[in-house]
Length: 290
Image (cartoon, rainbow, N blue to C red; front, side, top):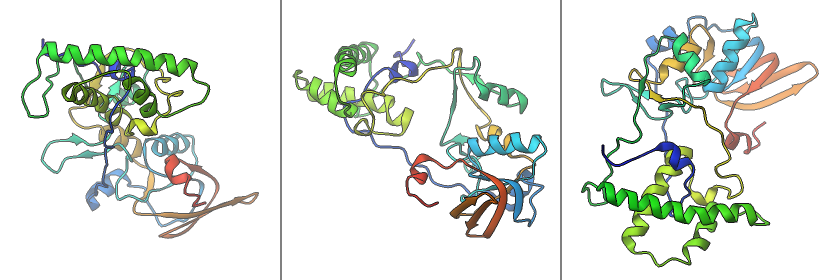
């Protein structure tokens, strides 16, 4: 067995250095792909419900409402569906650039969707990874074990701070306080930063300076195996999108609502409905575009 690498262990590990957030660009659907996914698209600008955003949340909401007999239009600024779920097949093989795993299949709603859409999954072994040094040389089991042990020692002190501090601070600040008591070599710090990247940027897309000490490691997990989709995660989003009226490349500018319904102004004109479901990311909502 190679170096032990357990993703769930990293959820309980904190971060030390600055980890670069992962950036995703927008993919483009061909006209044929759009037609395949959205055969019911028409020119109507009114509906019972407008769903804003065609990420997994928007698609799930639209699918549920449509299945209950409501007339639904989905408005999506990108030229593809899926949001942070994006499978790129431009190299001839599916490559997931956003979501990649079902983290715990037991009771996970994505597991149910995978079975519904006939999407093949494959279990991954988190303890069979190969780690490398910054110079490209392979890391030994003993070296990786040392990094893990050091990280666990430091994080144990951060956990105490998490319980005892009267005011919140960033995870970075908490680790800085703990590390001030250590005399670590450049190589040890590099190893800890490597471990940190796996536990923050890879999992949350955020640096430790942007993560709350109080709220860190408060999430719950599904049990069971962790699996990937050899055929791409887009099997889930494509399955949800099939048959929906989705308007791609439609940027939402303003949302107005009142007792008489909702009006949404977009780059493709105005849409009206009785109700609207907004599924934009928090960062978009914080810009106050409505």
